[in-house]
Image (cartoon, rainbow, N blue to C red; front, side):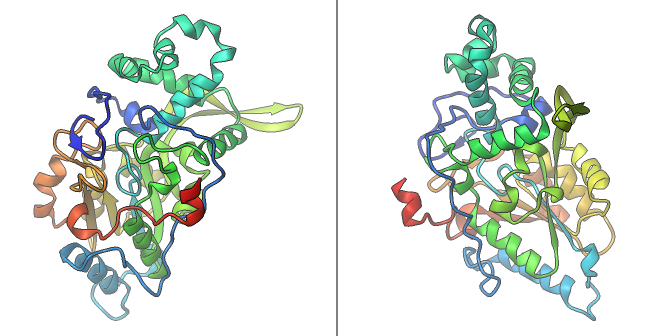
Length: 359
């Protein structure tokens, strides 16, 4: 795995790709989709015991203090409940993004599943490499190669068909290194934080470079965030009337890339309110935090810094996934809170049930 250390580094030397579409619509190398029943609901904490997976320290104190100040009537920093908006990046902020984004694992599996319908893929790149398991060759092909894989795997179905495909895949697919289901790769401290904010009157949104229709089928189950509160990248969609009734057909064209400077645009267009709090983990989230904290009134920016090579992965400046340079250099001077994963979190992932462990 390039750019970081962690449990059993990936054998694939990921090529640095600046294409926003890759950051938008991709996921983990060499996805492992072992057959398994649908996983249980995430380990969502009770409101009575907020942030129990967080160690006492500056990061936790800064978050709790801000929430208390903005929700206490009669204080200068009080924020009316209707204006309490908290936005979260997904990959690397709410769940693991190494050794690469989860959505590419889905795309690669879809190519393999669709291959019988496309015999020409056996001799046509980049599909030939996908079918041969050579993910490095796919990435070496650059933006165009990845876009071809994404377009072929994400289009041609109706919105309802795509939702069903994602739901089935995410229910059984596993992370190639931890062997956990991807839905069990959510960060327990962040699940507690989402619950804590909602119990304090904050409305929580996901603002991710990932595909919005890839996330919507499962985010409510894992994070408690309803699908209408997800902002992400999207493909073009066309309305059609078929014999069975009206449908929305997904097209092989990208409509919006929700990354970097586009994140504030996506928030403005989809939410219509400037956030009070923004959480991210990479320089792809910089503009979202900048726009949030640059507004008048009490604002909070938080960066999740991946520092734990034993329990997760340690990466920042030199990583090709979730690169964090500008945020480290400028964040402290802007008053942003840096959450040190190794120091600030007691645990990383939810505890698996006996049923989960036996499967």
